[in-house]
Structure formats: structure tokens, C-alpha cells
Image 1 (cartoon, rainbow, N blue to C red):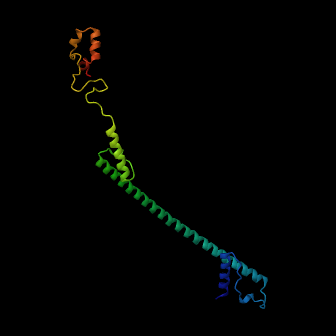
Image 2 (tube, helix red, strand yellow; image 1 turned 120 degrees about the horizontal axis):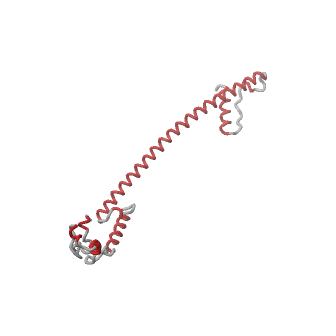
Image 3 (cartoon, rainbow, N blue to C red; image 1 turned 90 degrees about the horizontal axis):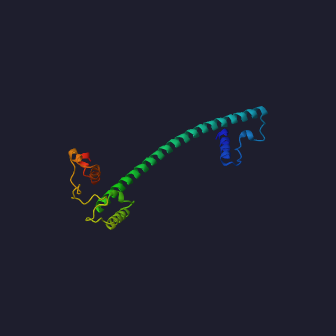
Length: 192
């Protein structure tokens, strides 16, 4: 191997592990060899520093590009995951809606009374609604409505005949007109 490659590998190992690893001996490191001048050592050191600085810049830009690519891929993966989750939720909602409609139809219960996440829960709430409907008090069909309007089929003006013309009012006293209005006999004439 060339001498610079061995030294470079030793320095890389040292930086990666954080431990001190002795550099490989080169022919120039031999103590018996003639010593280099201080100016020559200074130039070697500067050249090595520039070389490592350039490598660091190159590695930084490459690492930055790699991070951007990973982020772009991660974003696409997250987007795909989010779309898949939305599609699954929509499918589940549609399935639950169809199941609710099916249970409501089968039980004869309005859809708003069918609640639950499973068929069993929905059937249980539908059965509860049916039970409640069956136990609710039913009005007596023979009893008149609470509004006092009377039973169906009764004449509207059962206290007297409708007054249909203003000529009939001319022959009445004011008290009789008020009473006829209270009784509802003026409704036809008044347009009510």
C-alpha cells in the first residue's frame, strides 16, 4: 500500500473509535533516517490539514443530501400511511353505516335508535328501543284530545250554527257577537 493510504486509514480509525491508534510506520518515520527540515514538516502538516478539511466538506454536503433524500422518502411514506389510514376509516364507517341500516330495517326501528360498533351492540340497542316503545303508555282512543277540540266527527260549531253573512250580525247585540266569536261561530265569516 502507498504510505499516505496507510496513514489515512490509521487516522480514520482513530477518529471513528475515539481511541489513539498508532499510525503505520512509513519509511520517513525511521529514526535512523535523516531528519526533515522544520519547514518541510510544516508544509506536510498544512497539506494534511487542507486534505482533511476538504474531505470533511465533501462528507458534510453528501450527508446533507442523504438526509434530504431520506426526509423526502419519509414524507412520502408518511403520506402513503396517512392515506391508507383514511381509506380504512372510510371503509369501516361505510360498513358500520350499512350494518346499522340492515339492523334497523330487520328490527323495524328508526335508524337513529340503532347505536353500536358491532352487530350485537346494534341489535341490543334496537331491542331496547322496541321494548321501550312497547312499554310506553298508549293514549285511550275514546278519550278526547287534551287540547279540548273534541272527538273526530263532532261538528265544529256544536254550540250553534255558523254565522255566514254580515246581515246576521246586524240583528245581534254586542254581547251576542262576542259570545258567537268565543264559540267559534264567526270563524267562517272572519276567514279563519
